[in-house]
Image 1: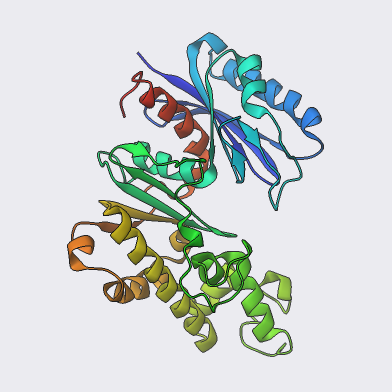
Image 2: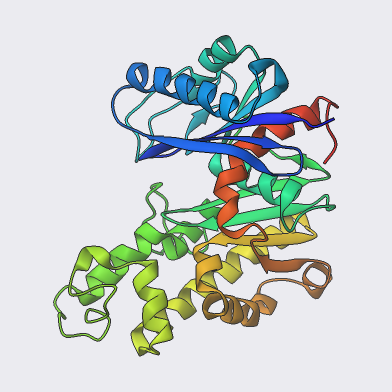
Length: 327
């Protein structure tokens, strides 16, 4: 008998919703723009859920759970979305509202935790019990499965490996600390560093890349990857630093959690060997072979599908923790 769940992915510009089954197959999906106040958007979410269920030939009674993933900070105890840098909603009771609307269990997790669940259930982490997922986009997020369970911590904020301090005299991170992994490897921080270096150098080779076309606002990881492919020295130097600092952070994760797998998503997935090879060259400086010999470091097994399955995986984790489903 198939098990069906709803997955809801809330981002700064859109709400993406899908109906998925226990094989990780998406039966129907859609999205609505994140425009307006919560009271305006929520009815549209409920309407799209009903449409997708109809498109899948299912009723609400056929769906076992709903999972929501959203950028932090979150109040997981009370099921609230809190104000984030890319979203103006604050203290939104989305879990309770959806439970009332849908009549089913609803779970809420941050997007990095949802990512590790997706990799664990349906990606490269299948069959493993100790898995870490690292995502490098605007910031650096991470999710940790240890001993076959998602680690959430006392307040639900465990797994913030992006805010491990590597150098207390390093660049200021958006979180307020100095020298975090995110301050070196996050997209926002990288963009700011590139802008500082190239602001008064409009003739630099990076600024003439088609991906940049002289626009400082277009600097960031896509431009860095393009610059590395073109073998531009500054781009190669900056990617090398990202790989060095990421290796430091992974070394901490290996020592702390002794995982079977660390899987890298988003920017690392797009960059491929441009980031992965120097990362693996630097890693022996920061970890014991007793850890690294028993851990696979790999690019995301789901690739671009991880966002699609993230919310659904939060729902499946609820069923798993209740003993109602086994991955």
